[in-house]
Length: 280
Image: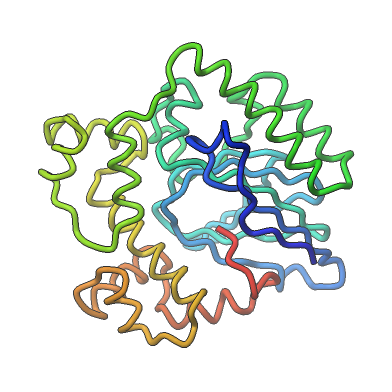
């Protein structure tokens, strides 16, 4: 298994790309029903590349299965999915700054692809197809990242000729993602230099949801990842560390977003092929 969890982006991309993740794991000897990874909602927006075997998205609630294309945009999730890994599982994640897909995709409202996996070749220029072909042929992991960065640098240069500056609303989204304390709607609107109604509209455009709902997902995401990183913590400690008032509020979010209890989600994650890694 090859795993690079946090590859920093080119300096020019850092206002837009938080990091890259690369995982390559051969699974041909493992039965398909044991190649499942639970993916509850998180606070990020990403572009994923699958240069080798086809992976599949399995909707947890109804078992619907969707094959993923070689490169996909994943909109903001509001419910859990599972990923069925292919026999030669190679995934490269481009983790964008939350809300950036709205700018990258020329103002496409986030609600149009919320909870969906969209083939990047449908939304981007013809060069994304060339990039997919290069990644399929490449065997050096560092050069895979280099190919992606060359594409992104060209794309960002094209966008910058129009407009790409960080707006106050973008800083507010980051504040919600990264803080462990409640932030009032009035404070968020003030920081974004917007009225409360304008703030709600901007969030719907960029994330497809309200600030309050995004804050719940971000808090849940922090709790899940903290428990993965520090499994010795009990769930009450995790709840308090992530800004929950008590364990019952944490349990409510796990029931809604992971569709199982906190303990069951950790058990399912531990049973996945990449059990030692935090993927998303």
